[in-house]
Figure 1 (spheres, one colour):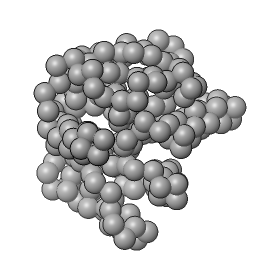
Figure 2: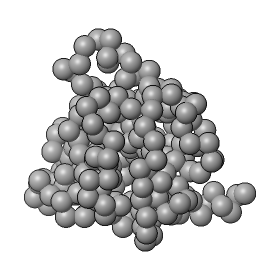
Figure 3: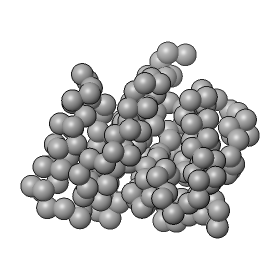
Figure 4: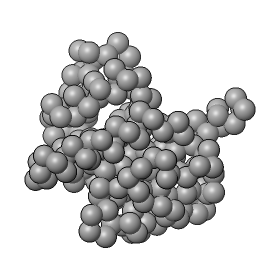
Length: 202
């Protein structure tokens, strides 16, 4: 897939105020510092695109970016911000859950995982919640450039093995590096494949 245009459209906390044009939405979510903005900028090849809406407090919002005038990248608030107060964490959780469970246009959720870490309970619990609610999702391992090839494969395999303890069929997964552009073509091809399927079903 060739990305010819990618533009910031809107930020908000209410899914009722999200775009109403019915275009497919591909949402990105992950823990703090997992590399979400960097990945979005790498995919679109627009440096700073995901920062368009990142004035103070914007991490509390749902951010829509229109790609090629045909589909959206949706930058969701991160989860697991230990530094935030209980009230803010609950508000973030409400925003995230409202979008994921009620936004009909959400076609796929990309869950970002930092490949440098062993499986973390907070991510595993989130994946379990996605499964319980029948949410279509894929896993995106980020920061692959920070590890050597052998260590990278070991960490990814450890994660998949951990998931296999609970899941009969593993979700699709991608290994990426925002620094080197690793995984860009694979991710965009996956999105294009889904878009084609959606068009064929209409």
